[in-house]
Length: 136
Image 1 (cartoon, helix red, strand yellow):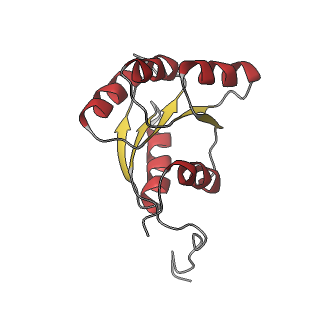
Image 2: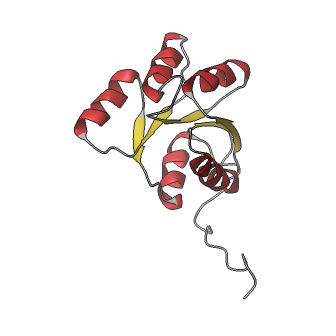
């Protein structure tokens, strides 16, 4: 069978918007940006919170996926900075830690939601579709 000949995302309609993905893991960046691009969105990548803040000040960003633990500026610090700058787009924290304490920290920082790593394609789509419009 030819690769890609069966379409697994028939239930996933294309979305539109600019998504900023901040994660210090190159592997996570590659995987999640591939998933996001297949949804039809444009993806901007940042390897730390400081770069994410800089990108969001230059580009029109509709949704942010922010890794909680990164060098230079953590996800929580970056989210606080975004909110201080009156950045209103939804921010979803990505974390390998699933404790109630982490969820509370994410909310206190100004996040709209959080996803627990490893992130499945379907889960990422459902979260993205909650915040971005359909391309149709």
